[in-house]
Structures are given as structure tokens and as C-alpha cells.
Length: 169
Image (cartoon, rainbow, N blue to C red; front, side, top):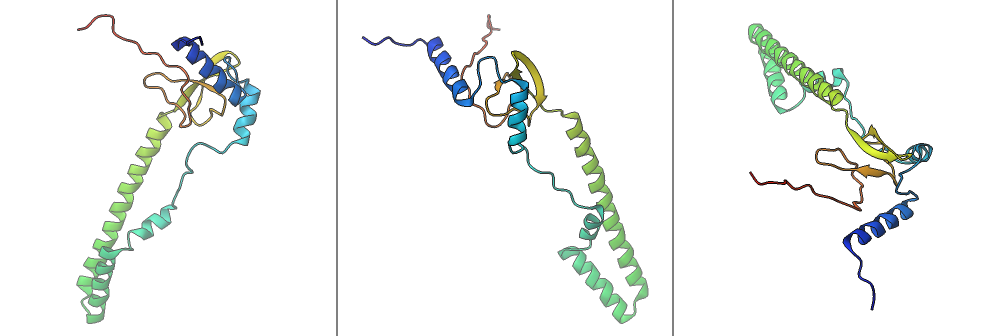
């Protein structure tokens, strides 16, 4: 009669199989091996797309609404209403300047939030838990995932525990 595996035996077998497939072990990767794998891998984050401030400013003069305002300015110039032309141009410039300034302030706020959110993951390397940037775990790393932790997107869960309250409120 075949022996039935307990839950602990299944977890140990799954963990050992996953570590063997990844070229790792229960003690985690060595730091030099993790460095080699990180250098050979593709970054696990999207590339930042930035637009020059001049291009952003020019963008406020392009589009359906600015084109209608610019057409009104051209018509005012053609029929000789210089006062209307001046008012339309001032309003167009104020609209572009205000939009550009608000977008600039919003971009600065987002950059500040990103700089303060130091996303880190906990990995087991050289038999010690260490915090690394969330983009740096590599194939074969043993990653700790607790409630609220940042974990890499490609993660195989081999063992899990739950904590239950000792008494009910």
C-alpha cells in the first residue's frame, strides 16, 4: 500500500522541486549568483516615458478647442478687429500657461511620491534575509511574502501559513 504524504511532506517536496528547477536551495541564492542572474535578465519594470517641457507647452496650442480659438484669432485679424484679436490671444496664452503650470506641479507631486515609495522585497540570500529593490529579485530567489509586502510579479508560492486570532472579539 503506497504511503500517503502529509501536508508538510507535500510542501517540502514542492519547495525542493522548485528550488532544484531554479538552481537554488532552501538557503536562497548566493549574492554573486543573484548578481549574475540580474545582469543577464530583462528589467522587471516599464520604461519611463518623458516628454520635454517645450513639447508639453506646444501641446496646449494643438487640439480641437485651441484650433477653434486660433481660427477665431485669425478671423479677427482678417477683418481688422485688433482688440478682439488681442483678447483672444491673451486668453489663449493664459490658458496654455495655466494648463502647463498645473501639469508641471502635478508631475512634481507624482515624482515626490515615487521617490518616497521605496518598493522593496525581502529575499533570502546567503542564508540571510535582506531587503532589495522590488525589481531585483531573480529566478531562483526565495522571497518572503507577508501581508503588505511587495513581491515580484513572477512568484511561485511553495508554502503558506495563516495566522488566526486566538480569540474572537
